[in-house]
Image (cartoon, rainbow over all chains, first blue to last red; front, top):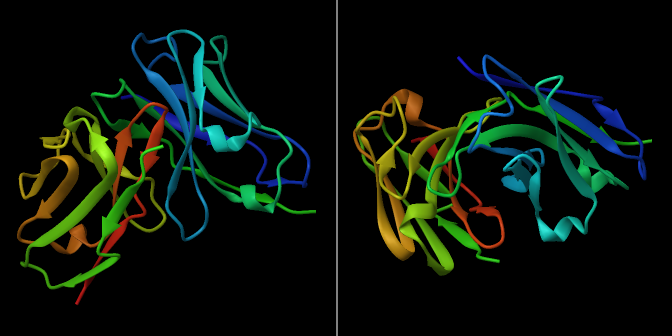
Amino acid sequence: QVQLQESGPGLVKPSQTLSLSCTVSGGSVTSSGYYWTWIRQHPGKGLEWIGYIYDSGRTYYKSSLNSRATISVDTSKNQFSLRLRAVSAADTAFYYCARTKGPLYGLDLWGRGILVTVSS
Amino acid sequence: EIVLTQSPGTLSLSPGETATLSCRASQSVSSNYLVWYQQKPGQAPRLLIYGASNRATGIPDRFRGSGSGTDFSLTISRLEPEDFAVYYCQQYGNPGITFGGGTKVEIK
């Protein structure tokens, strides 16, 4: 059974870079056809798509993040990662990694989420 | 960017009743690309419906998705205690993914 697990610092200082990883267990991050996705949720608010990586390296991001986000895959660790640069308090949120087989399908597998707080 | 507007914001119902949730898009969405999720407090969202009307694995048939174009709905028949949660619609567009703001189904 494939599972996803987010990991990374729970506290990041303003203007620094948020770095999170999502470990894929019971399966492979190189499995073809999957979009490995990051989503966040501000406390008490709705869901916000950040971006995804697919086709062994193609990426797509939410435009309003102003190019601050980078998603990558580390096949040696069976992980995919999110880096979000120049964070502010507005980036405080629960961050989820998730998987989809593409637009015809939903996000069928999610990690449990990790709370990241941006504060000095 | 396509904006999804969900209504009502909150639905107060009793177990056994039927919930009808609406998701309206700012422009036409391919039915193939409309998805519904359920989220309970402290948990990640769970996939319910994809392709507007296809139930995900393990989802009971009291959950039904329908709609096309700009108007989609999720109907939950015979509400069970575990169905009280927040529901989000989602669409795949160009570019990327957008979510609706959510509808909370609460116990009356």
